[in-house]
Image 1 (cartoon, one colour):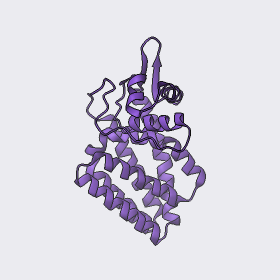
Image 2: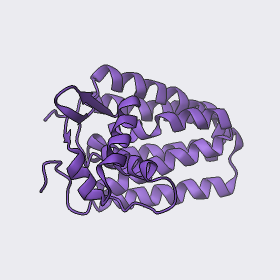
Image 3: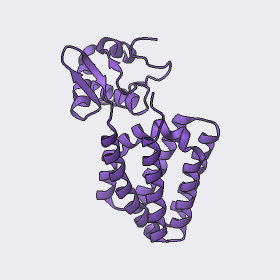
Length: 225
């Protein structure tokens, strides 16, 4: 185990198309959002470069970009560290997420046909399977895909763009509580599907608001290391 603390097999393969600095950025961001790189963890350029099979320059450029976006803290004379979000930061983002997702649920109830309902049911089944297998990473990924599908079915491009801006941070905050949320989260997803299928806009809004608020409260009540 190197001092960067990356679990075996956690480093994503760098895809060849696109500028190297962008591919390194995406790889590091994925490691941060999945918490393979933990909040507060020291990021050593040379070790990250070795993990990713690149020189230090694109790693340095990626860390600078991640610093600008608030994912990494650059400390004088100490180096780079994964940002440790405050409770206030998490609360603000998850509150905004509730507003966006509740409106998406309302619009989805107004606009979704049978094909959309079937897609949601399939994603829900896959999420339930991941939870049953205690596959936290899989459950987190399927949760993100389920919510993205609801947003797609809402049919509002501006709303989707706003949601995309917070999506990765939502994953970042959801990962440490995914096991605790477990089956209950997917029961709530089933309730949402039923409301959307019934074209009940008010019920869909209420279910989504309660669902996202439950995740926010669970995050704040999570055990601290």
